[in-house]
Image (tube, rainbow, N blue to C red; front, top):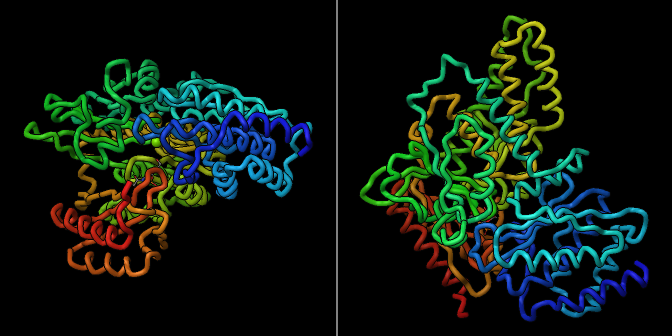
Length: 576
Ligand SMILES: CC(=O)N[C@H]1[C@@H](OP(=O)(O)O)O[C@H](CO)[C@@H](O)[C@@H]1O
Ligand SMILES: [Mg+2]
């Protein structure tokens, strides 16, 4: 790094002094904190994004969002060249520069890292960073900090893509690096075209329209997802979608008693839904929730999560939740059916010439009943720690890898080899047996690979895929919900003195430190039939999370409470 570059960094960093007495960590999904202390972090991540772009010779994404957190929080995360999360190798550097208080230490960290990674700053390689943000009011100021961080690296250019959902930004980065044109309208077109393709491939005789829910009501969490769905729905025929909690002025506060995270964790209907919606299919998203005939859905604050629910009774606003595990099960079932059809010998006399490796990835939060169901389908199931970066990485090892967190964050990854094989299948088959089930199955799988976001979980594309499958099967949300019955579960969070004192192993199912705590959890769990419980430190909030499931709701609640008590004893409460 030459002197001119060093001077530029020192000068611009002086405009963004880091907060004192706070330790930030890149966490499960980037940096998150109260927005008022984040300018310096965002500025520094802007520098990191520019270095990453030079190093990889690719466009990098930088998203300003705190997803399901309260509106006063904000955050920042990076999209790598493939559209996935920042490579985990760079996270320690992100943590180090975010926490370097002394400007000299800060510059030294960058100098050493640039040398170690051999990043040719100031050379011919330029850097391009796509910026996106959600609808949080603090987004504008933080966007400016990111721009200044980027422009303090010689040759780096920031391109503001505007207010976007997180998955839209990831999609754009991926597509741009594949050499394609990028715009929001091309995103909407790709989603709506592939949805139409799936609907056109529904066997006419099998459509049992009377059973299908008529209307879909979507809870947009008062965030960016509602607004974007309003645009997308103009291009989608055959679905009646009503968006609530759109975040328009006066409609409500982002993520406050709305959104997928709230619905999934509290298991009650979000604000804006009433006893008039009984029987409808509903969706929540980021968080998206759905509710239709009425199915309801919830999106989350940045629209990368999706859960469905319906309100079965007017007596209370308790919901029947169709969570990420059930979305995963629906997708798995449909994909298995297509693969089976593809491998059948038909008129053409051809059978699949290679067997597609299909796998599913879950975390410890997956309901035990879902894992059992997927096992019975004969699927290969793998568990990873919480956080999409882990699930995504694992899913990418398959030809078709489906991953979901119970909270509705997930997608389906298709390997390049699988996509070209499917393409060749459609070409081969077309001359001899066009219109055969084999041909259609290949076309459906290709349409799914175009519809579902290959970069990251995406509430909008996930919703269209779930809808297409329900239409294909002629299923209502109630039918879908009966795939299996969830084991009763409870999640709690506790603010302890220092959540980093907890370390875990075996995909977070076992506490390693503090010692003795796991034994206490084991002895509580043993008291309940089908009991299962674990704790882990959250990567997005200053809490530890407790999960418990058991054969009855009462037992799950009691187990969660008693494990929480042990955790408090071992860890001490946060006094602040
Ligand atoms: C139990 C739970 O839902 N945890 C969520 C939450 O992470 P925590 O590290 O648990 O705070 O936010 C992450 C980012 O959205 C998401 O990936 C994860 O699944
Ligand atoms: Mg999110």
